[in-house]
Length: 455
Image 1: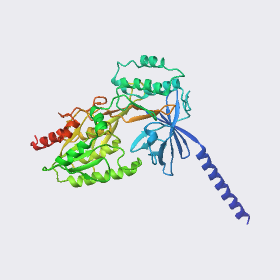
Image 2 (image 1 turned 30 degrees about the vertical axis):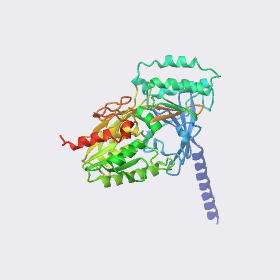
Image 3 (image 1 turned 135 degrees about the horizontal axis):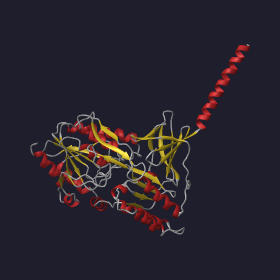
Image 4 (image 1 turned 90 degrees about the vertical axis):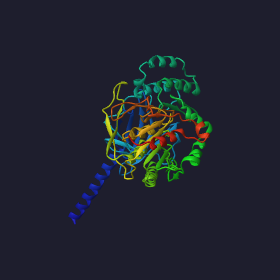
């Protein structure tokens, strides 16, 4: 009887110890720095909070609750720009002590002892505080200074700060900041609030025309003269066989918001994109040559760009290396190589032409960088915008959202095309007027090129 009682006490003690350890584990707070990206993660058990950090500020802007596999969804807190428009579950994320993986991008984490010191840690509408944090964000993370060494940012900052006081209105402050991002000339540098948006680079001509006149003339011209497009599960990908030829055609009008009413669920989008690319490959497998149309593609996820490009390669290939800014404007991390594996649904060993315009940007340029590794690939149309870096999201103390470029993508030859873009092999201007009169000059040039015998 005594042994039995002792055993019960031992079991109760073990249960108590394990429960206490679990409570301690869940209450313990750990801190991690996302090197080069200006984020600090605070983790308490399975609760994670992300902070936008400069040397003067620390603003909580994203949170996630992880499951037992350390997976969850990042949701915005207090933002007023793109992040605030997100619906559904949020960004799918996987987090461990060495890294966090966000939509198939892995970012390194370094454990730190505590939060770095910061003067600004709470939301505030104070114009001067927001201006100072805005300036530090740009100074610490933007790579635009590498491309514009002539820019005297300190003088510009001093001049603009002199126009601000405690009585400065929101509209006035927004106008000042919007004016300051223009000389950075970076297509991924934007400032947004609930009511306003400022761009470092104005919309290209073709996009301005589309916003006022729409793209119906393009789709109607394709349908009436060139190709009957097939539709799958996404709203962005269409494909077909060019009338009277052995040539295939794939048009992709974006690499984000891939499905109708998808609530930005990345996992659902991956399934839909795979389905459409599989269907396109099957439908076009007998075609001798393929046109890939990225003229009206404003970017999105590099992962989808790589999925498209992988259909055309035969072997594993280096597509680019990636670096991020680590300190002064000229200081970057070690280059990380990115490779592309052949897709299981393939269109390899075909001649390829990629159609581009001034609107081709970001992930669409990533797709083009990948496609340029395909032997004989030709680019037809206009020069692309030259915005390869991921858009680094920052949130100011008043909730305004700032995006910046903080990365360099170097092609396999080590060339940086940021703020330069890819020049076409064959220049063809892209104008809505041509579609409105029933002509697609870039597509006709691709057909003309395919009709010539290979060299």
